[in-house]
Amino acid sequence: MSTKTSFPTRPLGRSDMSITRIGLGAWAMGGNAWAIGWGPQDDSDSIDAIRLAVDRGINWIDTAAVYGLGHAEEVVGRALAQMPLGDRPYVFTKCGLTWSADQPRAMPRRSGAPDSIRREVEASLRRLGVERIDLYQMHWPAGDGTPLDVYWQTLLDLKREGKVRAVGLSNHNLAQLLDAEALGHVESLQPPFSAIQRGAASDLIPWCAQNGTGVIVYSPMQSGLLSGGFSVERAQALPEDDWRSRNAEFQAPNLARNLALAEAFKPIAERHGTTQAAVAIAWTLAWPGVTGAIVGMRNTAQVNGVLGAAELELDGEDMARIADAIERTGAGVGPLRPLDDSGALPADLLR
Image (cartoon, rainbow, N blue to C red; front, side, top):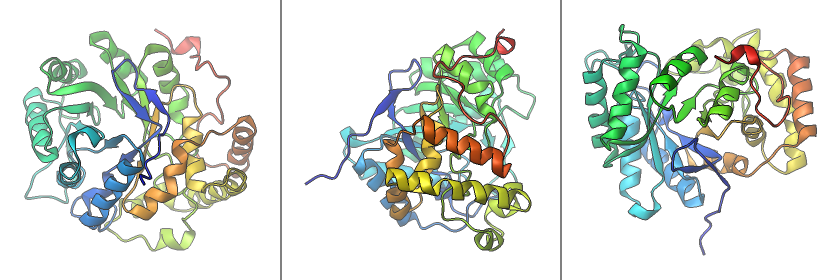
């Protein structure tokens, strides 16, 4: 008997795709042989996690060319090759970060040159083993002097040519989003968003809600801090090849505040018969305008620990309790809770 679940889906902006409320994030599947890895990772664990998540009903994977310097895309491609075409999930990936093979530990470069993006899309298609990428996103604003209108037009051209199905932006601010939209519709935006990092709720998410742009948020558990499985001891033991060992949220004084907030999720999780991780993810999905959340899953145990978020809906009482906990602990910055269900954008943010 199949254990596949029929999870609820939401339309991804004005695209022709509807996605489950959570998707599998493949950053950690890139391994540790590059500048921003999550420590060592076994490829067979990655493939098992992908297959289980898809078997259970998750219908999209988010990765990027830069994760493991191509390795995460190769792993995703190997997992896809084991699935019948009709059972494969949507595959979202990103461009705009390039690297040198002889300096794998150097920080990737932010490149927006059209010829670079075209080389990147061909390499991603090859590594993933697909004929078309479902969502292609500019990973960061270009740092090589390429204007936004130039690299965004390149992505629009790739869609017109049929190499990609939809195009979006990641890690861009509202002004950049508006400039891109003037050239051609931004079908999705990918900002960081969690109960700790709440800034996107101030402007980006409401704008997207009003303008037909899907929002897939990343780091809804703040890279594990809100999962319920983190501790001061674990933070202190993070190896040097795990980027979190150098991140301020994993160090004093932020660490204590963040862990206190995670602890406040425990009674809410117990009330719903789920995990603290699922509550942290569901909190991001409760904001009007958020389409889905990217959840890192590097083994089958992690898949099983977060799948509940695909159908968990927090109510007003839950959101009020979490807002109180945010205020009490002093964790993070940004709005505490949605003001209403309209996704309304303050007038001073419109132009």
